[in-house]
Amino acid sequence: MKRIAAMLALSLVLLLPLSACGGMNEEYAMCYVQGTLDQNYLGTVEEDFLELIDTSEEEVAQAYEESLSAEAQFFLSSFVESQLPTEVEMRLINELVEMYRQIYAHSRYTVDSAAKMENSTFSVKVTVEPIDIFHLVADAMANGAADELNSSYPDQMTDEEYLAYEVDWVELFMDVTYEKLPELGYLEAQSTLVQVVLGEKNFWSIPSDDFWALDALIIDYNLY
Image 1 (cartoon, one colour):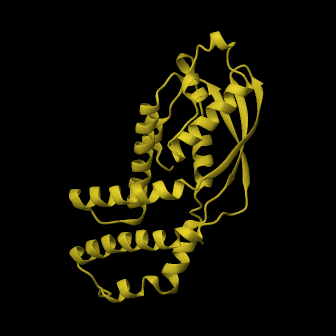
Image 2 (cartoon, helix red, strand yellow):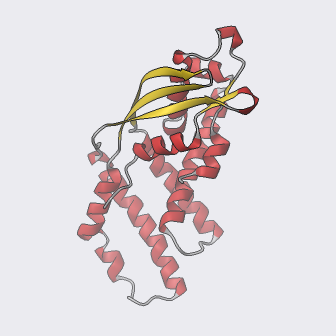
Image 3 (tube, rainbow, N blue to C red):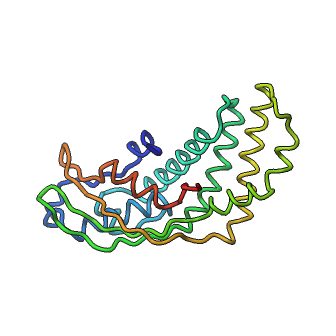
């Protein structure tokens, strides 16, 4: 489950009471989902979202940076087997953060509608156009972009050589990603339902399973 620990900490929960506004309703549920998406993928939110959850632009900016860092760490944990030296790991994370910042700036989603399911649950329809950038990168890597890198290392590598190879691979992946950004496009739009649920201590939030399902649509990693 992608970015689970980080996102549990980052999710800006919607506080009750909203008694001054008449309590939760469909409009607030849509505002909450829209703001949560904008916060995580664009790093910006509208004033009505800030007022709704009683937070500040500074807190949103911090959550956005931590979200990008979590995504970068997810990338490294998925594609790098070696134990990286701390200095190297931090350098790659910082570079990956900037790469994801540029990718997520192209996020396309719409919050379409909301319906009250019961007193403690609202269902919100969201439509996402998945970003195809990693399809472009995978095709480029398979069609020659990685040939020079692969030929520069022996078939049988020492641990030190394999670590160096993995670092070079990540850097090449980022280089190819930047080369392909101008060609970035989208896959067929997909719609999903996201719940906004009243939980313990009168906090409203998006259940983690719903968030992960939605998150998985923003950038498509299904390359094969």
